[in-house]
Image: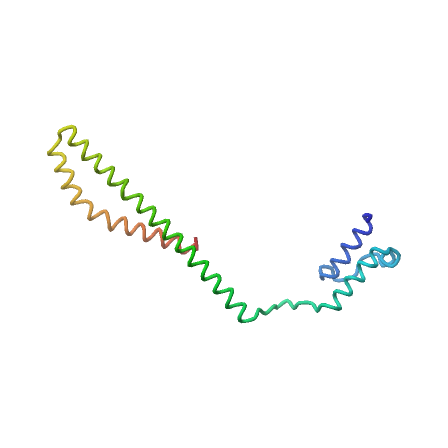
Length: 151
């Protein structure tokens, strides 16, 4: 196929898919060239045999329901995966914090700083109940921001 045939077939295809409003190809070439004539006739046969699909494609109600169910199941699966990841993250954070606190207390005992250990425990008992609600509020705000963007 030479470049003239290829160009003519592209123009015929553009017209067939209504990208071009008018027939702007070389009609003499289509009549004389067997390959381009066959291509044009095949497109005309396809157009005659298969009606064009209207632009306002209406999906059946059962198809729509099945698609909505599939989307809903996928969203549930993604949420379960996020919850599992969050649980594993929390599960990993607890031993890390506990190990840090035990190391800090152990170092206080190692350096024979008994009164400081008691002071640290008292400070923890006073400060920790204030920190937990603040951290909870930050986490809630972070999750709300993430949910509003759909991620």
